[in-house]
Image (cartoon, rainbow, N blue to C red; front, side, top):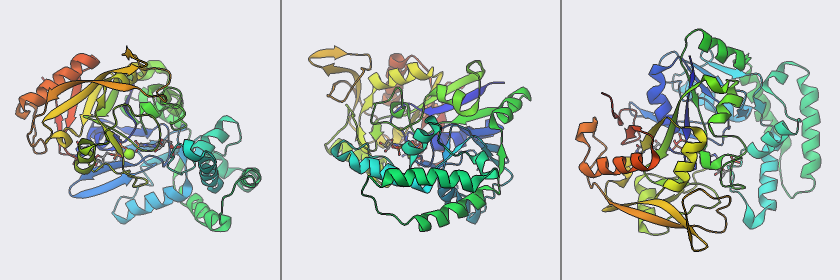
Length: 422
Ligand code: GDP
Ligand code: IMO
Ligand code: MG
């Protein structure tokens, strides 16, 4: 068996959580492979709504095993909050959620460092989620990190050494903090973590494959936020692309199966950084209002714009996407015209390949298509799609050269239309 991977092709918040939940009945194991509580994955079903941050989105569909992989960074305090909220609504996970011993821990001081580095950047700030993601991955790569498995071996000593190192750095910055208060909730989180099984997740996942189990890897963030291929430096600190599933779970490249690339019918971004198709007019406001485009972690309004096929083709190339999933088609229901960016104009030249650096500005070149002006949200099958929506999907498939297998027409689990089924 192979691992299928579901990941975002844009700047995050494409709707990964919703689709992982929809696909979960077809899998035995669902696993997160990178990122941390910077993610906010929203799921809606039976009139309920959940936002998951570190926990995979496969927990609501039967007794599937969910795994937090080695590539993830985990904040015990936020993990405890997340688990307790789920327990309150009747979802006990201790038997079904397993955590890699190799996942790195976000320490209380990592969050302070995130804050310190951001304010030191002034106007060049990344606009991070403030969850300590960058500093934790920095410590991982510089070989100073603490891992979940360390909790069981001389933990106090390792913790103190790490904290002292961070406090030394923080002396150079103007950050106010109450460390004992932060530590109180952090150590309570460590106790909560201990209720779960810490596993050698690379063995667990590979054994699952050997035993003919179906494994789905769930990405966080999106390709354009990837540390190597995103709009650097306005990116997150992990490999959000398909290769990240190999390193973040311990899966060999030849054991990757389908790669589901997920995108919105338009485009959004939170935080700073280039966004060529961004709209500053009433169309952008309408997308934000209808699509309820506000960050699920920070509540920040998401920047909105038209779909960017230059970036999308690049993302499909890097990930080797085998199937596409288009989200939030319903948000464009009331638009007379829909635009799609097919090239950029940079220094007077037309560019179709995603360039090294977008920071100096790229002017989008658009193709215009007629809107469908139909309520998509109640549509159940492909046969009911309006002609203009089919034309938009055909146009995208022609441009992207990968089939669009699912079209999402609303936030609920049920508002999902499968295409090309026969
Ligand atoms: P993720 O981070 O990729 O899981 O995406 P988020 O959950 O952060 O953001 C997606 C938002 O869009 C959530 O509020 C979802 O409930 C919502 N959503 C998902 N699919 C659709 C859809 O097809 N239509 C609409 N209107 N909302 C959707
Ligand atoms: P999901 O999984 C959208 C953005 C932040 C910031 C940049 C770096 O819900 O799609 P970080 O805190 O990671 O150091 O911030 O990345 N960002 C996201 N944007 N969705 C996310 O996750 C994001 N996670 C981080 O806004 O611009
Ligand atoms: Mg999100």
